[in-house]
Image (cartoon, rainbow, N blue to C red; front, side, top):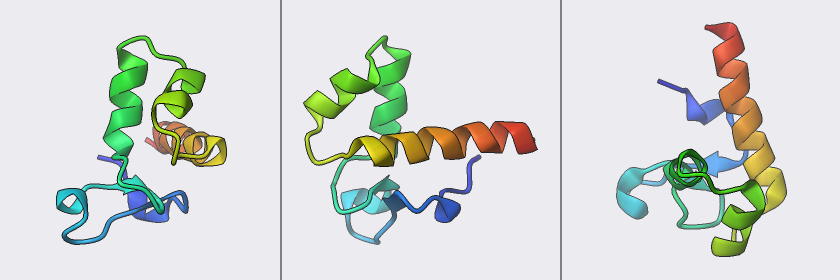
Length: 72
């Protein structure tokens, strides 16, 4: 399991989206990015569908996930 606490683009606040990790200053769960990518969406699609999320946040999340694989 990834340690999202080390990723500056996300936050988890008790009571906000049931305590799920979300993109900072949004209610969009990080999980939504990966689910959409798995279903064939492109990053540009995701950004269009979730306008509160910034490209830099998506890039930071993907980089964090990639780094966790390198460290494993």
